[in-house]
Image (tube, rainbow, N blue to C red; front, side):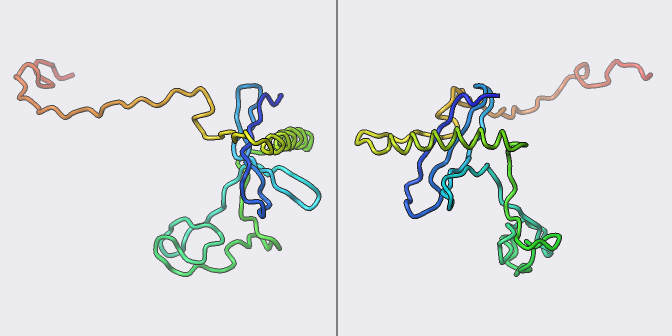
Length: 172
């Protein structure tokens, strides 16, 4: 499996550790979006796309993020220790949506993304720099959805005796 394209969208906030969002295309067939380039203490690293973990309110059953203090639906106060599962010291608040299954693939992706990030960062110093677009549908040759008209309700006409179901059919 080869990375056929890497797109980088730089983040403007210079004080933030998050430096860019990326999308990676494998073999010109499969895209993974929302990889993040983060500046760590020993250089840049790539964080895989993830989602916030949730649980349900004991009162109304609505889903809430684990860091929420109050239910988004009923407003009741939620327990403070909901993010402490199986007696973990540090809470797990996010789950990866897509990730490599071995260190070789992780290193391969990280090297390609960080290299593309550094190239984009260098291009951004040019006075005629235009940022790359990473919008979901703009970047790829995906046809725009066509609108199909909703069926209009036609007034039901009285059916003749011959058109009514069961007319002339024998009982089996």
